[in-house]
Image (tube, rainbow, N blue to C red; front, side, top):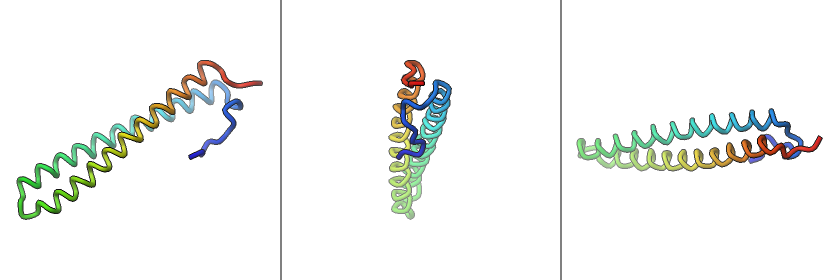
Length: 97
């Protein structure tokens, strides 16, 4: 997934800070997505009980939303680690000029 593939050593401290902010923003968005999808999954679970005639449809929507929530949570964890890496790089100045 190397969309910003510069050599690690070629980035300036400011570029690392910018990358850190980007990953922080993506982490926050992923957490928001996980929360929203999780809430929707819970809603569909409730609707499956409340509306037995359409329970199968509600259970399918619940499973899809739960899967999206899990994927978003995993992406949030990934972005958290990328943010920490960028912060460490900016702090330690791992570049040669």
